[in-house]
Length: 77
Image (cartoon, helix red, strand yellow):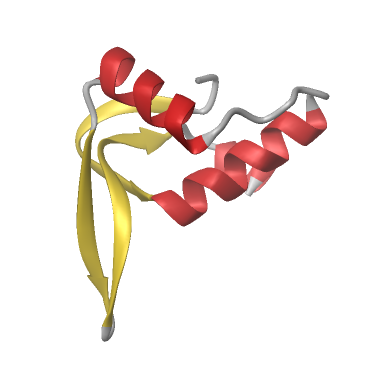
């Protein structure tokens, strides 16, 4: 939660979120949580919604309502 903030117009692909989260956990020597736990925390704490966005010809699953804080992707992504 150190790297994300509520953003009504923001969205993060689940793939990118998981990548940054895994790198964050590795750097801080934390065991990563399951996808089910991540979903619970994001929906209850930040009020995010699951969505699909088009990326060319493909749909990607996203979290809507959050964005990464400045510098987080450079540090962990």
